[in-house]
Length: 408
Image (cartoon, rainbow, N blue to C red; front, side):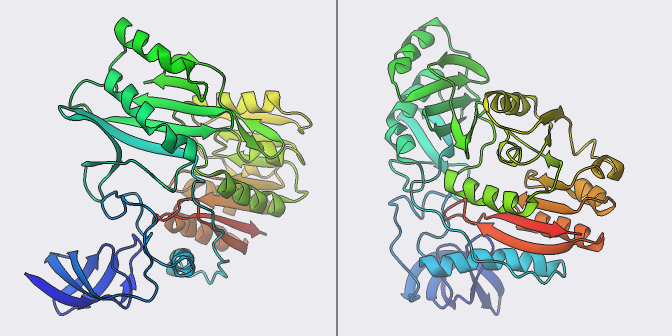
């Protein structure tokens, strides 16, 4: 049965929130101030009709918006959208009792996302390639994506053909595509091992000069050239299908904030260093010890250091920082520590830092909640919160990247 409700706020996932006599209802695609008609299913509401639209409602930039589950807020005016993201960060810190002067969100433009994780399945009707429907396993086929780098969008037909060759019917696959500076890096996962016939059919894609590398379940199928991305004056070498900051402008903003805070502090420890996003920039000023648990990523980091010029000494160490976090005494020799962990955060590292003598800390995170938790640990250990800088790396989604800096 349809009912009429008024949206009072936006939730952290971008859903409109309505407070009703029957309890709180979350309504995707609805905005604060709107009067809407919904069909309720427990705490969820399906938007049936917008009776009174918000003045901040705008036309989405993508025809797939509303069915594709990747973007949550294309329909919200830009200024309000960025303020909503800033509010997510501020609320996360407030929940930990931290009064943080959260800066304005650094925005990025359309077509700037250079890394995409697509889903695909081969059906009787053909290949479906795209993103999952919001809250569902169903894959929504996409023909465009204004958020992605144009080079990725232009190659969607090529990716569909690769999937058609590689996948058996009914088996879902994951395709990680990076628009590197010198071509596309395509990694297919959950595919079957290519037989001779498949390899012969795939070989023609090697002639496409815009594809730098193709790997299937970790096996390199062809390599026209090693994918590269610029990182300041250095070059990074992404690992096939591995972690990379999703948008180059966002990465630059994060790195600028980190490097500015570290300043002349030396030496520096870069924990959860990945492929060297911060390492190569920090090493232009000071000796760096870069620690990473993933062997593939640390191999890429080593390659970046070998190819760079003018760097101070860089020491790389492979170490699982979750299972084997550093002791305070290990951190004491460093003038500054940078950490950029996965979404789970770096609780054990923060605890070690809180008991250390390190003068400066820069924390980077895609999860404001775990970042605020780690910030609370650092503050309780004697650090002062210097700066909280959000960056809209994940355009139109409910995610936000944040740098928080601290000083003793």
